[in-house]
Length: 448
Image (cartoon, rainbow, N blue to C red; front, side):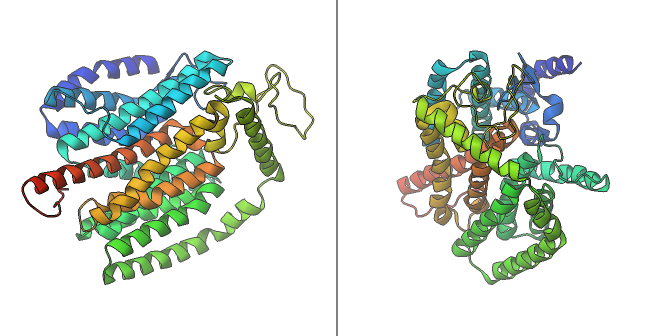
């Protein structure tokens, strides 16, 4: 039945695109749904050629309602404009290098089909990025994606509250794991915090203040040690950027209020958080170390890595990278060891040092882009994007040192949408600056 419903939805992509091409409201709704359908990602996602028992980052050719919305947007924009911008910034070239190095690693793959699953995921990420970027280029509408994330945060909070009354210890909401919910809330929370500081009207200020609180509470309820440790760092950077580049006395008062609210919230959850850190099994830490050592063995043994999405195979015998098991249990054909708990070592193991370097450069490009755009965007309607990304991206990257959940579709999609927002704002700034220079004008009054 799920496949039947998916095919029905797929058949609606072309008609929806034709209607959206001439109806701006419908196009905006599709852009909104491209993020809001995270709420039903698992319910709508289809894994073709699925291998659900595989312990890897991709288990099939995954496609969901998010991707159908992206395809509809791209087709609608193509009909409307007659063209699409496929390489809008240098970051896409870096991503292409990362993609090519990932492809090269397949020469060492024990199972090429599993590698293809991850290749498919990367292509789908590119589709979402290009759909978001071209939509913003056509409409100038950046905030629709912010409200899409807000819809996810608010409705997910209802699931978190329901779980609380059902005595669910670690909340995961609509997400596949509590760590993935924590990472999503960290990036969204920083954007909401930046928008709260930058908002000029009471409605937006109140709306995004509530959204920030809801995202923060949801994050703490995950009791994800990585998310809880990294989130305050991101929020601190967002507040510093807001004060440094758009200083006023009101913000000082707002930051003081946020600090007091954070203190009260911390007191409410502090016992559970401390308990989570203190009662974590020692075996968890030792397993992380052992898997990290195995990842380093793979990186040092294979220049191109052991093969994209082949960690789940290569970490087990007869391959020489298997970790030493303190529990002395024997491996067999059904044995499945875990995934190394850091995105960076995982990429390094599967794609080699070159793939890891390309990933770091790709991530670093967009954070430095946010840093460079802070001064240029101050006192514009789009300042919140660069300020929120300036704090949110480091929180995301730092958590990825401790957890591999960024490799999951939901978190990666959120990340590339933020990349697309940063890329578009930078492109628009350069475009309007060039136009004003040709007219003999001054600094560009960015539209928002």
